Structures are given as structure tokens and as C-alpha cells.
Amino acid sequence: MSENSKREAQSSGGLLSGIVLGGLIGATLGVLFAPKKGEDTRKQIKKTGEKYYKTGKVKVEELKKKEIDPRLKTLEKEAKKRVSDVERSVKKVVADKTPSKK
Image 1: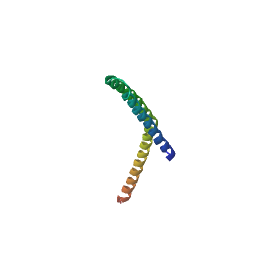
Image 2: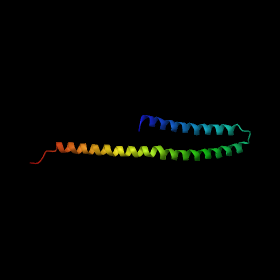
Image 3: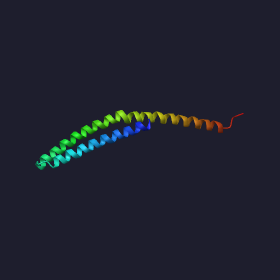
Image 4: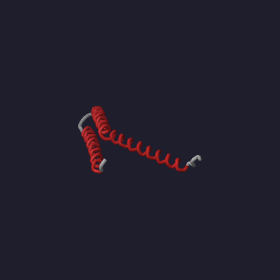
């Protein structure tokens, strides 16, 4: 993955987090300063929190499918290749160090 792609992915994740967090803070402050009874305010905060939780959960799942899972697959392939390379190297070293039978 290129440096540009990495920066864009990080930027997208940060932007999404900022938007969600800003929305949560704004909604909470709006409800807290609204002229309602405490019980109504608590119900509204709970309802709004549940809504944002569900929305955030969906966004996290989308991000996982689009960005995290493909990266993990790439890393897994790379790790398997490196393990295979190390195994070959170890076998070669062992074979070179083992005295041959005559």
C-alpha cells in the first residue's frame, strides 16, 4: 500500500471519528440545555445515544470490511511468505551444517 493511500485511509478514519464525536457532543449539549424536565432530558439523551451507537457500529463494520479486513489479508499473506522463507533458510543451514555420511 502506498504512503498516499495510507495517509488517505488514516485521514478518512480521523474525519469519520471527528464527525461522529462532534455529532454526539452537539446533540448532548443541545439536549442538556433544552428547557425540559430532567426525566425527559435523560430519556432524550438515552434515545440519542442509542441512535448514535447504532450508527457508529454500522460505520465501524463498514470500515472494517472496506479497509481493515483487506489489510489483514495482505499482512497474513506476507507473514506466511516470510515464514516460508525462514523455514527454507533454516533447512538450508541445517543441511549445510549436518555432516554427510560416507
